[in-house]
Length: 589
Image 1 (cartoon, rainbow, N blue to C red):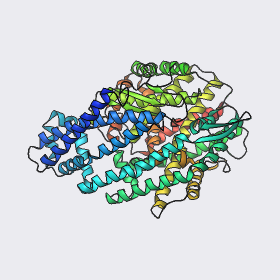
Image 2: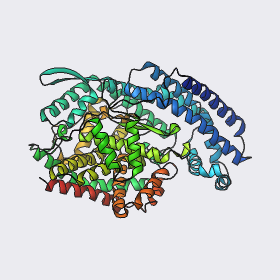
Image 3: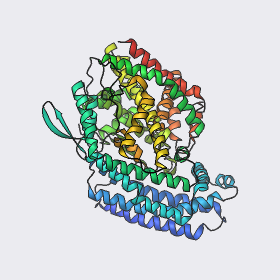
Image 4: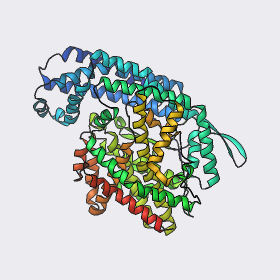
């Protein structure tokens, strides 16, 4: 079965007539929007018509840029040294800067518009884009002058964007020196990191030690990239009037601090249960001082759950069908129409992601599939992201961009479907293995994510006083891991370089890209509990929830399911489901 994606629905090449046509159209549409904004947004006369024109013109520009940028970025994700794609990305980033000025002009214009609600109510197009327009008016409070906004956008391309590209190049091209079965090899970093899921404990430890040694080659450069990015973020946040980068992240996440604090408090309460799980896993693997980091993902149970890619496809489609036919059809289509690139290879970035392609109503998914059950779970996770896009495909383009915390809901819901459905017909030994994989994943999203939240919080505090050197970054990471994992992990075998290999720290526009994963897991777990209560009646309501995530605040999205995200009890209830899984798992051995 084909394990590499096809991008032909986007473009067949950068030299294709379609790509060249869209490149020219983008030039024309961008120029038209800039000229219109400069000449028209001078007063509030004919406000309704002006807002309609802006929405129409902006949509045309963004769709073209998104389609071309998607194509280039997808190519680079599997071929990090593709010079043509890298050049196209740079050119598109420069072109996107041209939208800053008209966007700033519009935000300032709409931010000062009297009786905005009445104007929106008078137009069907504006009513459809109510949330987008109101959000623009609110964000106008943090805008700088037109010239400053344009300057910042231009400087970003040679600042944080350039640092992020360097970091991705470093990690995607890093070859790890490793000895396996007596043979010395050089393997791509993603391949070596995937060895953490191997059955052989010697292979897991060897890979962990080789990985940490390999970071010596890139950690100084990575630290420079990280300091450059975080320094820019601090400077820009203060210029915009935010007290702390987290405040901007919460605004961009359409989430309030009350929700975050309630969730974090519940997470801290749950840490003893996870530590109990880690200590039990350590005991079963023969460790005396807690679980060493290299055994965090060690497969458990005598059943060696291995899958061919075809078997993974069939497994996922079958169990997605236990939830809904629409979800199963979507997954089958993604596999069968080559929307997935699953083959690990040199030059391809590690990890996994889903790229929802609203302009063509499809998705593309990157994975590094080696046949483990965890790889199957990862595919289900990314297909969940894709299904989220499926539910949004008929929404307006400007209503298809949902915030980070809600982004993980559908993906983790799909993981839960796979795990729960798979366990129905499984033996005790298989249940043990599936549960362990599920709990291990939950531990990453609760315990490890909490450590990453602590790390990034401390990093920002120290970065305000100057660049943070490599050894200090390692110290902060070790401290954060100890705070989160406690006695669950062996303190002599932690991962001081987790900041080097996790790309989320290098996203200047997505700081604290950690708590959204916890939100997604716990919100999805809570929704799954609702599904168990309501059964088939839940499915349509769930699809509706996903379809409005681009045009509502998170608290309002949650209300569709009668969930109060400000209540610590909701988060405790979701965590209780995981704690029950841990107790069940422990009882099986």
